Length: 496
Image 1 (tube, rainbow, N blue to C red):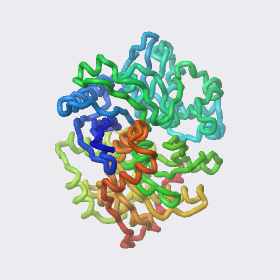
Image 2: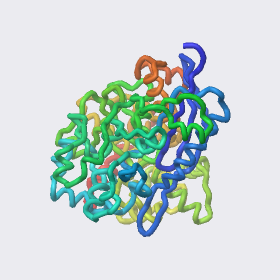
Image 3: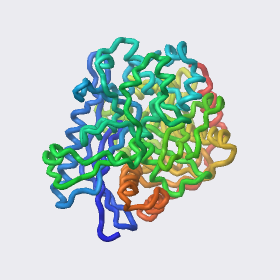
Image 4: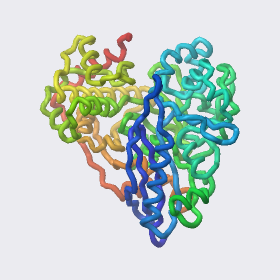
């Protein structure tokens, strides 16, 4: 291949978005950030929403930056976002309102209501999805139960990346990897779970045809191209549109003896498998089977992730302490090891008003020392995450029937050297960190495969490894991690 082709990744995460240009010269990828912006939910009258029109404005700003810097149109544009959330369109194709945020409290208690109609074991046997109140299933059921007028008026449901692809092209589809996050998708048949939808009285007709990652959706709308200054024909491609699916697509060296952690606001801890694992034991362990690239399944568990510290920083900033990440890590390194442990996935941490206070209250209730300063709280969060990773890795080994020797961490959290070292220490395994921008790389890589610039996902992973040098962490046994792991397991098992 001669010259360099540019692909644009629109990567929208739960706390921020980026528009990134990815160059592919036939041997290596290069990344150039065009635009970065915050993605902050908006509270109104007791509910929490995404400011989707502000996000669309920022996406266009990123595209305009590319147009200002390059006279050649990009070889492709693709969107990836966080999971489960959606927008609703009326019969004229107009957005009916701001999409709800997955942390909106309208789903509180809803899973138990669904249980009365379809038992959890039956839902899992079809969908294979981890039970979480944020899931699309419970969001839709809460709207149906409350008689939400938006749902009544909706003609089309578009998951978040599909909504932005619609803004770009006018095309209405449901991309496979994202559809699988909803808990209304049949994991074996790989189509919408029509019987489940019928039993719950949910409107299947608003769901869109499912397409695979790498599907061309059409060209950028002329009006959008003119507004942002992009000339010529620009293909828009359905990438692996769930951000974790894109991140996993770009994990170098991923094999049957490796687990991955896509580390950011959430930590997604899992493996790739050829088929979903829908056993009762998998359900009891609350694992999820989500779609991946090349027909693979991502068997994983969602762990609370850096959300804990993002929320702590927000509260501390409001109190006048604007800590940077390096300062927080330095304070944590000075704190006493393994003094206080939390379950990062306890319901107390889903959407508390004050995260530091919630962590302290949890520790008091568990009979542990209360982390009484900033460094102690940060260390508590990081060690608890490392211990939860260990817990999940052991469960994965049980489900797979074989060991996992290496943990491959990608995403923004891979830059946190303390968390990465603690993960190696807690699990007793080699940890390979990087690339940081795995989600954008996976997005771009799938586009490159779709346009014929790369022959396969496997070749793309080799190219990622050639493009970005990983950092390797070996385990140290400087603390009693086995005792700490038992404490964490007791917290996970405790009734709440």
